[in-house]
Length: 471
Image 1: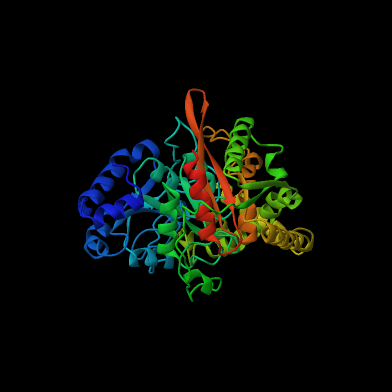
Image 2 (image 1 turned 90 degrees about the vertical axis):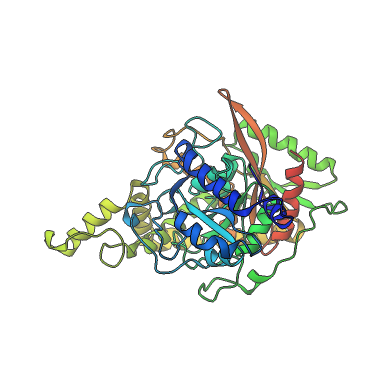
């Protein structure tokens, strides 16, 4: 069937598709084929049966959507890919999920993810690794790899994920689909388990750019439960898409074509730039040296916030629990529960964050990184005074093999070198699939990333739509 969200909505509106037949098709297909990719950790047929009649009358008509396992859903398990929350049933739903429901989106299941969204390959999930549909034993990227693989394999029409430093744009690139990370504050974070609160953002994974605009509009909401939610979240103008007279001006950071970029991706990226110039798009190379510091500042600030956010999982108030009478004191109990409940990558980031926030290191590391972040925001603001958008490859490499980099965290962290700046600067960014590159007999996707100024998602969608049509 392989429907886009737009095709599904149009077909339901003109009565050429039966909603329940489509939904049953996707649920059955997802259950039958999930073993090939392990995109979903659980399905919710009881939810579907109890909500379908209400949702089909709304704008999205009950479109089957995958939800990253980090998004809380009332009375259903939300485990964050972790043993620590393996059986956690939330007493309330995330605002983005409630908003999706109000617009007719239907959750068919929870998608696999790196534990607590910490990873770039979806290999750190307590429940097992996810496989990229485009390659044998290839990673789908992370941490939203389950959502990306589900959309790429057509196990759902679209999916929601979260992006802290590239956790959806990177897997979108690896799996050959579209991802849109909105402006920080456009989509409420309330009810989404926090990894790094000043960086996390819910976004959409779809098969087309137009679908991304439809789904993002369906979850955007000014939410008083989220202190960072902005009134601009409710503003939305439909992109023009076919604005043939508009000749945008784009910035291409020279740093994006430097060390670490796979030569095959670089060749295809430059070919795409030339095609855009043939359309009379003005693309200028610029110096953006602060971009080279985005990864170290991110891996200073993010672990600090991780350490703080995960402190609540102590085995008493939240998380994995045990009989306290078996332990001589509370410290031994904490050590046991947190050691068993958290995986290696989560422990690594907690330790790093605790080190950064210690009184001896706070000023030298955390404070300096915050100052660098403000400089990055200022540099991006200056760029957008002159240019409509910034363009880069989405990732520096093609999707690697399972277990290839899991024991080399520094190399894996560099997978997000192009995506991290957008999270640090709170600006919207999109990954659009561009080319399939042959490697060892497999055709592997690469993506193009576009970044615009705050609240300019409509412009971002228009630019992405043109890039998509050039493929």
